[in-house]
Image (tube, rainbow, N blue to C red; front, side):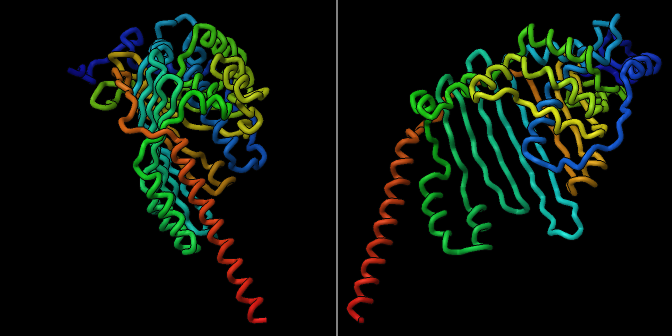
Length: 377
């Protein structure tokens, strides 16, 4: 049963600090001094970099930098440590992006995910739905040990979109839809190795190590970039939670991120794809202040929810408006191999055979047309 919210709690009770404590905490963070940066535009590289920073860096900041050094029992520190060490999780997320350029046609994009992870079993499940205006495409992926399992939903949304531009490809989509839709395909270890992708499967899911936590602490000491704006009581999924409203200094965050390439997961990614760094730090430094809200479950002292939104600078620079929300629970999960999964090599063979047949048919029609033309001459 949830506790009475009218009862004042102390920091040691893992709830809301008093006003003086919050003021002292905020005062320890250097404010943003830089003005708006150059127009860097919205790119996939920037989105990935910001996501990595927010999901890893800002949470680390709540652990190490915001708290007063002599209060290690602070709720944010405990929440980050507990969250980073979880071995199983259930999560969902929603990202909404819309164009706000008055001279262009409005485009609204919604990306929704639902999934589970099990670090010890080396397993994950990931459902994805992408909607562009009124057209939606869905898919699901599972990773169990060394094997991947893939399923694509009905492609009618893509078919409707293609029909707006060219009807000649509708039959192709119908054919592919018949072969793919709502069917599971297995990509086994041998095929992943042959494609050079096995190492990526080995990386996920992952958990933070003690060395990772030490690295985050060291980096944040050098480049603190988060300020607490308010702390209050709230409820998430019917459970009592503490809500922390934060501000992220993007320039300081870029400086902080320069050391994150040595995190264990990023080292594995660099080795796998042969790159010198995972995060492009420069794209983060835009002189902006980004809002982020974190909810901490009072009973388990783990992070249960995160939300964020674009800033006025984002909207003016890129002509887009967006929000994101992530919900996480740490209940037990059971991720199993889907029944009836076919080897993806069978699908490849069927598609290749159909393409080859189509080429031969077109060649035959062309030869007949040429012969007819020659006879007429």
